[in-house]
Length: 514
Image (tube, rainbow, N blue to C red):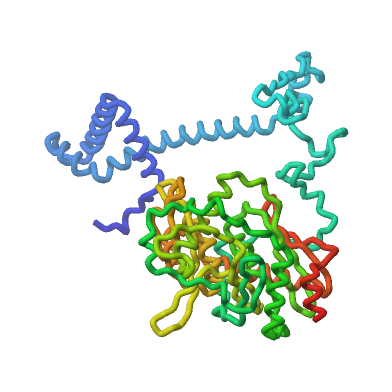
């Protein structure tokens, strides 16, 4: 077949008619069969005009069905298509007439008859009575006497809120008149963990000892030796000797004066030192990176380029008998874990004086700041080569399923900070029961503590160092020469505040003058 002779539009009217016929055939099988027979008969009669006999009419009809049957369908299809086009044009013209009609014009009688004022009243919603919280206004949402809440503009009789979520006690609108500067604790743990802060290995420069009676000597006579066979005392009663216990006296700035006196005695230069402090102040700063619910404060005094951090003790509630006894359990364990030549074998603990102490003067560097600090040491031990190292002694309640996580989150954090800052390599912990009896002991390497908690994602030592570096940089750059301040961490525990002070301890003044 020569396709060039046929000029059939494949996707034209033939295609539409075929689809139209198919739809008609699918709708009614009986009408479809009758129409097909009628079309075949008409095609047969037309073909008989050019044939010789009736027998050949069927053959010719069937043979010519390939061309003439399509023509017959084209004629029917054209008629249907014209009808469809006529209906479509009528529908479109009708739709256009509806669009052109102005619904709000003068020719719309229904619209013109509509009254300008509605005869129906405006519906008013009933007032919502707030029964769940009657103390906040009684009706509506909040304290407003309607159901719409607070408006954009302030209402008369109600002053603007200043608490910003903390209430009147911690209002941000009111600040201490002594306020100088603040450091907001806005950096996340992830941000601080990216910082790598260098920390120099602590180095002993001097020491001093406080003996019974309160006298101070610039030597190590009060340093005790660790007893390696401490496990032999498991089961000991830590209450023994409580009746003769001598509690620690609060020395205040006098204790800071002993540290400065030792520095003068050993002629330690302070030209390149940025901070002089006790280790206790640094413990507070580093621990604040994670522990945000314990208030503290310290004195800040800058003289000759050196910032002196003085220890301030916050007022505490009166201690009960149980509090005093638990405090004694720690001192009793220190006596059990150290050698005492005055105590015979098998002799019980008695006459424990908590004022006797040995303090080491240590030089280190945190970030860009050189630090000279005093740190009280519990005892020491020595290697086989004779090198001396310090050992930290601690007590804790025996752990269980409920207390282990808090112990690792908080207590181990404080243990690590205290030992790490002073370069103490070992910590020996005595676990006791509620009655004060020694249950077991555990020796920890300071550097292993961070690996232990890192797997549980409790805290990171590097974050503590990065946080302390932020604080020291802000503090040293903010305080002015020959001025006195107070650095405090107080509720709502979201910033460090630097307040103006009006006096300097005599121990610092006398030290600077000498």
